[in-house]
Amino acid sequence: MRSSEAARVDGAGHGKIFSKIVLPLSMPAIASFGIFQFLWVWNDLLVATVFTSGGELPITKALQDLSGTYGQSWELLTAGAFISMIIPLAVFFALQRFFVRGLLAGATKG
Image 1 (cartoon, rainbow, N blue to C red):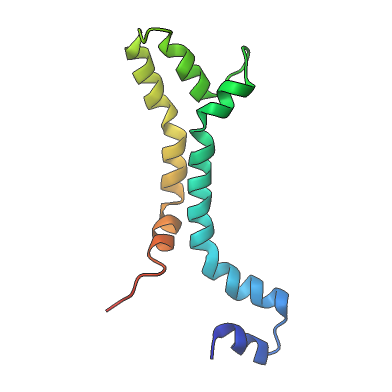
Image 2: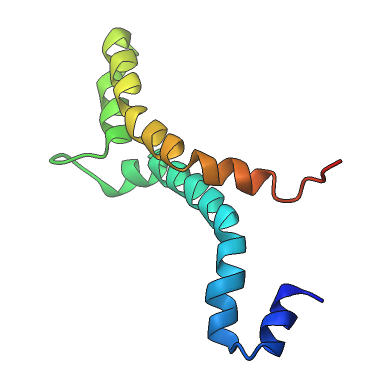
């Protein structure tokens, strides 16, 4: 008997089954999706290039402008790239336990 069926026999409703059984089991997958979604949005240079001009820029657009037309000042670009990696690394390390658990959720033991 599956746990959702057992909960139904015990008198749990749809909301209780979802909040107590389904949601905790799917948290690793949701966290893995959240990490990938955050990194995809963070690295999306095309949207930053199209929708911004002057003033306050996203860090990816500022890094593109920093490189210049002919690629000079590469040392500034490298330093800026290392600084821009701090936030994605912090997000990844904060959610790493969920990420690894989500990747190993379908693995077999034994």
